[in-house]
Image (cartoon, rainbow, N blue to C red; front, side, top):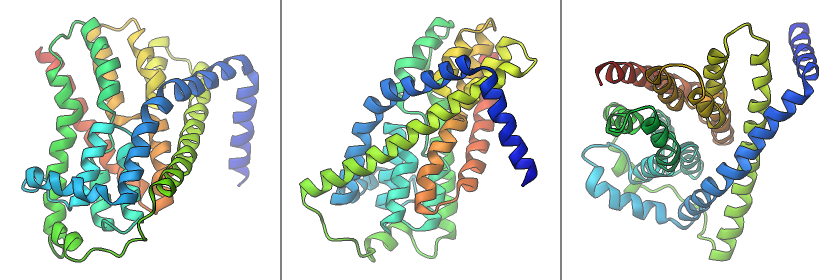
Length: 312
């Protein structure tokens, strides 16, 4: 206990020693949240919640199952989580899985399996921010990088799905569709909108707090006796929205910039982990399980990017 107290006091002293820089870092995090995350993420969060509360998620999952059932061995609700996680982006994967598990629509084992691969950077951010950076670095053929960002987790999900199906006492689809878990009475549209708005506004505020808090801790990198380039790389593993542009401004060669940008994106950063934990804690799902698989997919992706950058 004494060690923790002294550690906290040291953190306070370090922050107070550079209040202007700490303020600037925290402000950057708050701005990124308000200017980028809220307008980009909030509509998807609202739509997803409304679909879950109304039961439309199961209908979409059934539609997806006609195409994906032989590839992904998950229930219809699980396929809905895969769809939202890949197409709406982080942290929608964790949010949707947590909501489905809370409502009893997927089992714990399926929820853990889904979290292993469907909580990734959104394609809107990747296409709007990352692809122009790749072009500027001289990589005009971006398909290998798109595959690394989404193809590797997709293949990982296929493998995990077959392992899940092998361990499940019965097929996931039969368990969820033939024996549905009793759900709460369907709400009216006005009530659904109100509840979705309240729940997601609270979630966004929590996410904003994590982003601001994590960015403020970039102040500790200023005390490290490291070159500025290395500090920029470390900052990307704290918070990617500000850290990725920081890598881009380094004096590294283009190959090194691209490698670290893509690796940091695959990992997501400490801020993303903290944001994910806010959803997992609410539903009781395991953060350590998520971190284990996120580390594995990041290492696989890093080896992949190192290889294709050397080749091309």
